[in-house]
Picture 1 (tube, rainbow, N blue to C red):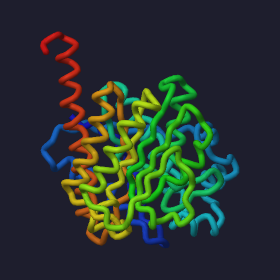
Picture 2 (picture 1 turned 120 degrees about the horizontal axis):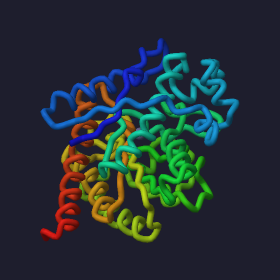
Picture 3 (picture 1 turned 90 degrees about the vertical axis):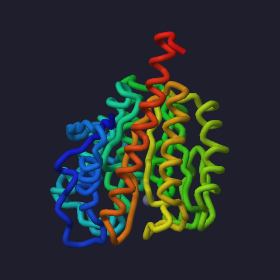
Length: 312
Ligand SMILES: [Zn+2]
């Protein structure tokens, strides 16, 4: 069973300017619904303004809420912040938080949008308006749902906004594995950054992940994991630079869920990046990723149930 968070507002009408394609969010849900797999959809509430302001500069939050973001910031974001976009980002941010709540109940849950890891304190950037990962992490910690949160960011671009917004916090570990030469040019400092060379393939990628992720989980000892599961490390991704196959991406996603679940940790994923002319192909990659993680979660949840009931 895949517990997936989705909302009609995720599919904001395409702004008149900018190259970002919002139809992927509709197509992802079509792929999931058409897959034949068991899925349960959950609709999020908008993220309350206070929680956005707990992480972002209140003046920037006001600019977004009044749909009056200065042009320089809109250029950095990559599209104009209309009222539709404002409603969208409030729901996508609420969605990552809801995915965390569902993950604590079911082991794994996915937000079918967000992973907006480039958004900074006083501005958005790189198609990101509010940083749902930082906002949701801060809220989970502040409300006592978690005491130590690990954010695993495997989008092909560095999670620079998340790293900056959560820098210096001892209750958060940010791990970013990305293409070193990709956007952003000036990287922030995550707790641990792994910059991969252009053209890294499935084997090279898994070698790096296997070397670092289990060690990070064991040494930091989180009690919750957020996973930015961008599919833009794919070989055909328009903004990628790495060379993972469909199989490689699914292997990566299963590995993250396995490493967390076998230690009893819940995982919530956010969608992250994925770019190409063929939006259907990109959406299918995201859908396969979420379904693979749900399958892996089921395996580990069953194993845990069997252990608990003394059958093995
Ligand atoms: Zn990306």
